[in-house]
Length: 214
Image (cartoon, rainbow, N blue to C red; front, side, top):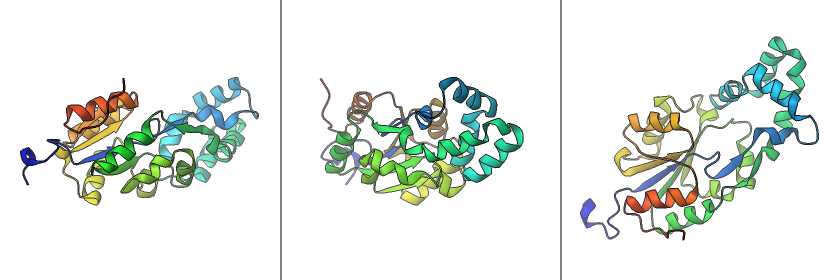
């Protein structure tokens, strides 16, 4: 069957999802609720460049290695690495509004659903309890398990190969403009995620007959 003969007229066959702040809300400060004041946590995040430290775990590093790194450079903050790991479940503050309904709708429409998430291999187990939609994917590539993370082009290429996807018939959605730009360079269709109604609109523009929020 050719593209134009497809009953729905849709121009994509699959959706490739980022998880954090697309399917599940993530707020790293929540790991410290009831334990450390905001000023100390902010100082820790700034001193160690927490986004870079966290990205290293997404790219395959362990949290034990992160603690060693922080203990060497900023020993006063080493305990806050431990607190982040122990409190990680609290950083996942619940499903993104409407996300699970949309995932279920896309499954019913017969689209392939896949995850490509920057996530520590050690902490990925906490995704499912916080957002059941993460378990409804046909398959998931977790960056920390592969030792390579977005926005590296190779991680997109790996996902396409592993899942058997045609990039021109796959919509990748992520809340990071950097990741979106990298994905587009691999030929993927892309949508910069802001909220679920916006993703619904993007899917409708691609011929997917999803319900539109009013």
